Length: 177
Image 1 (cartoon, rainbow, N blue to C red):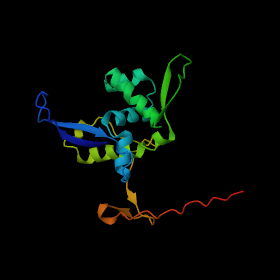
Image 2 (image 1 turned 90 degrees about the vertical axis):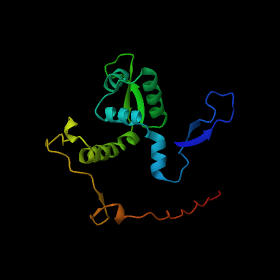
Image 3 (image 1 turned 30 degrees about the vertical axis):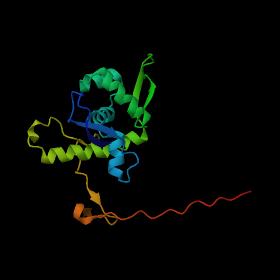
Image 4 (image 1 turned 120 degrees about the vertical axis):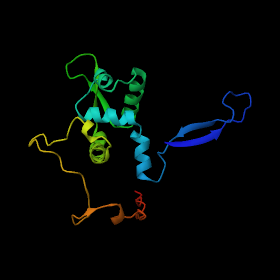
């Protein structure tokens, strides 16, 4: 989301001279990070995705876990469904309720959540307050730190990478019958 900042000019407005921040979409931005933030860039959305990754499926489960107001939760869930991160399915117990499950697009966010978790574990001012560690379900061993690898397997940092223009794709040729 972009934020446009404007100052109110109406002297009769009680907010005269105050800055007004309006959100606009980042969906058309050329930066992939900005575009991703447009899809799931607020903390509630990421926490809902985290909870869905942990197996929570029902509105009440998300609400109990997050303590989020029902109207805000409903809006975030609806947005995540509209953006293809979650989908609704009939309740697994056959009741009239619906459940929210991650789509493949939603599952693709899991490594981002792991990266955020690992960053916090390394740099948080109070790491002893973090109550859990991530382990391999099968072996019970801690998960290795994520790393960006080159094509030949070398670990890369920011100084080892650069951005270059994406190759221009040739337009598909139409064949008329």
